[in-house]
Image 1: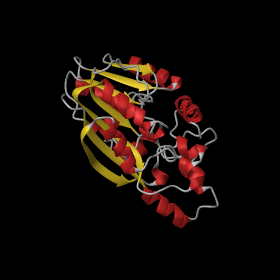
Image 2: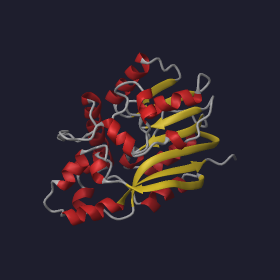
Image 3: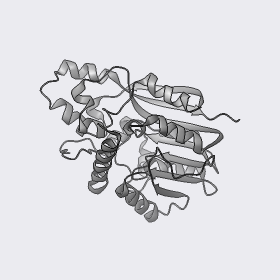
Image 4: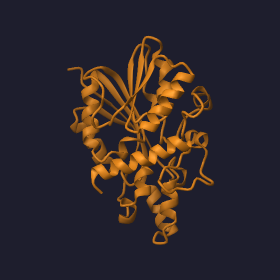
Length: 276
């Protein structure tokens, strides 16, 4: 698939998520029996208090980890959330940076931006703003951000190398990148790699782990560390359409599904932009 085609189908999928307020996101997915957003978020590391602290509708269950919990955010910092969706992580970051800090969320889906802005207004998040834009071309000034967070979004980009170059550009010297994402430790079968549902569901777009870390290093980041790595059950993926599309295909046996499950891992990665 061409990069522009991937972007188009990802935007369409996540626009549907925003409109329907559900966690599955393929154009034809059925959400019957899909895990609730809170159940999904609990699985990937969010506490009850965190989930209850954000506006209703901000948590769509689209993450694969909790980057805010280990981003070490401080009072007065400027934080950028790549692929901010309905604002879940941005709202969690808000009290950490306080009134003197700022949180900027960037998302390429108009419906998500509108939803996030509504959530911010109704709960009076004065230090949070949401900008429409692509993470490969951030609408953010160079060297203006202290910390970047992102949750299961960069894997959706067909140009991950540009994402990390942009992240490096907007960070201040000494700034840090903290992302939760899905990567691969084994290759995907061709029918999954080419599946629209699996791509929008964060699976088909995932890069091999070493390639992913290589993009971060190539962008200029130092002290790159995989903070944690866990196998991520396909059935528990926030975007339930992936599991439905994959398991519904008669060409893949249960044994193959188990092997595939072991190839998909959720990682939390920390990296720094050098001081000079």
